[in-house]
Length: 379
Ligand SMILES: Cc1cc2nc3c(=O)[nH]c(=O)nc-3n(C[C@H](O)[C@H](O)[C@H](O)COP(=O)(O)OP(=O)(O)OC[C@H]3O[C@@H](n4cnc5c(N)ncnc54)[C@H](O)[C@@H]3O)c2cc1C
Image (cartoon, rainbow, N blue to C red; front, top):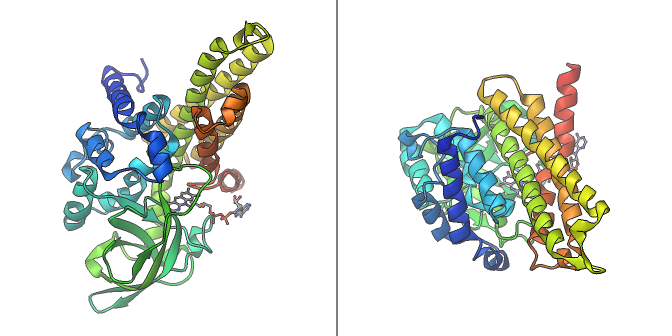
């Protein structure tokens, strides 16, 4: 038995599966049409003991290790959810760790507890119109003024931003480069904070994404998350978790597409025989399963090593690229084998095809992952 397959984790999977079947599958198409998840879903996920997994009980979470939260994402996707749903329902997975890590009791009570109970929503706002891959080049400025900061600038492509109550925002408090960046908690009702209309996207349609503008937003000094000018390192420290989560979403999406395709080719007949009887189809689905399994086994091995305290920066990047590459290929094959149905909004593989395109862009692009590996090899 591996650490991913204990009795407790099988129960957690079963609970994530029940939640997905009861709360997500019947409503996902409607949420894709409206472009956002209802707040009530966050409360229900908390009630099902899924939302707080991976966060300590002392801050309002339900405990468990990162493997538990990764398994929840994996199971939700494989039970008929989607990576878009996971990104939006679990945005606190990227927005909250910095607050928890910093350990300020006041921020934990005001932000972490209500987020983990599903009452409030938090987004992470790092990307700017002129600074995406180049995080150290961000320009949003926070100038110290009396007992607080005045924030001016803007952020782009922020997940859950049209619904968020809190924003963990990367700002420039010091000089140029990585050493001048801090994290500040901005709150939705702060004067001067403007959230755009939802941005229209290719996929992740149930996950709202927006642009933020800060016009001299006054932020109390108590909203500083962690130490001033240490924000870049706090962001980097969380990258392993985010990248591994995206790798898991990629192989889980691929696995779901393998499962859907197997069911389809057994059922669909052409020229008087099921598609599954044709060797060319059998080989194609076998190849889809192989790519998926390689991505899963490799990603999980890197997660295990990460949790064992090994230096896995390069292998995290390799895992993300391996899983994304597998997913891109598998979703494409799944649509192809579904024929015209694969191009229809009513078929689930069509959603996975659109949703998976972001996995090689968000959390560090495929090219930046390769750059990370190359730099570490050549240092
Ligand atoms: C749906 C969605 C949700 C998102 N959610 C969030 C969020 O919640 N919070 C947040 O902060 N951000 C979020 N993002 C932003 C995301 O993290 C960025 O889009 C991503 O980091 C890439 O940055 P960019 O778009 O500026 O692309 P760029 O950095 O401009 O890159 C453009 C292209 O150039 C390549 N490139 C860049 N630099 C190099 C180089 N040195 N060498 C070779 N190639 C290079 C990239 O790989 C890419 O192919 C989201 C984006 C999307 C689309």
